Length: 201
Image 1 (cartoon, helix red, strand yellow):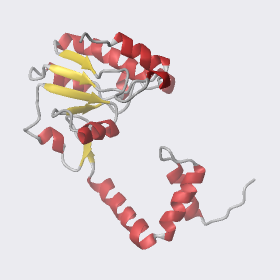
Image 2 (cartoon, helix red, strand yellow; image 1 turned 180 degrees about the vertical axis):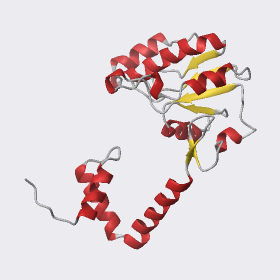
Image 3 (tube, helix red, strand yellow; image 1 turned 135 degrees about the vertical axis):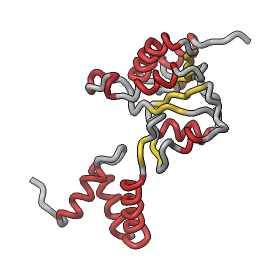
């Protein structure tokens, strides 16, 4: 049985940090120590920023993204192409597409993907609002920008079926060989996707 080596407040800080993605117990301890060593220039500003986030950040009723205004900044942007909706699993995916600046359309954040093993069914995702938005008449295309995982593929298949009655065009991100990728280093699934998605030149 391990001995207590710090007060309950520090132990709680470590336990909470360990819940973050990518942080195990050891990384959480290192992060906690870094915060505690730099109380004035790191821990205090971080705790203040977290307090502000708790009080001000809300979920957009239109697309499901997170922002301090409702509807969110992207949904309010009149320069976006309203004939298209880009569907993503999580906010991190939305931020990645925005950083790349490859499309100027509004988004729809599902809040995850279908996963029967984790008891995540359609009722746990932000799907009803997407169908409603697609059926409203202004939308012509829905781009499924979902992860190339088994769960992402299943979610894309389910969404394609659900969106069929709306009459909108449903498309997906291209999959296959990345730019600069060498065939010898690619896995079989990526190569199979590249062959299936081949184009005439």
